[in-house]
Length: 259
Image (cartoon, rainbow, N blue to C red; front, side):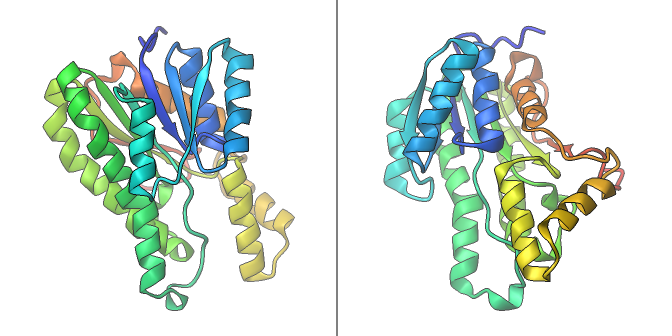
């Protein structure tokens, strides 16, 4: 399927590893010019090398902390007219909400809600003027299936989805869409870190938790980062212009609800 991404300009956040790296490679393979964003310069350069090796295309790397206003502006200085914005980034570790004070909540909201919203603010006017825009937020299944130990993520990411839903309906007439991808258990660096955190919290072994999570999923496995990237690439395509304000679960069928 021709996704119509040849020559499109894409900003991919969290591109130094895992899902973000796979998304960057996939979009580049479809012909997009990718600007890669993450905090670790060395890991970003690894992604640039991977993009070149797998797609034969170059990429621009911007080492930035998305919670810093000046860093967000540097990203748009490097890619001033993006056609695609993929909001993706780390989250807060699991825990008990009784142990979190106001500073924890503010940090979570800043990282997982306010920073992506400002990236959207910086992108949308140019997209509407040019008559094409695709914004995809990588959030979590927790916005539909909250987990008690992930309360910071439940709240902040749900706020981003709610904001995006309202804005999406104002933009779609100008061929600008906003959608969300909700990963379930994905075999990524972030998932490994999460299971290590759960191991420390519960005293159980890492291996037992990892195996239990895979066995509990209807697919009996963890998802691949490339499966997330494929969903994102379709949302970014010209063929997805009539799809907006949607949240797509990519979770192996783990969510048990109808809607």
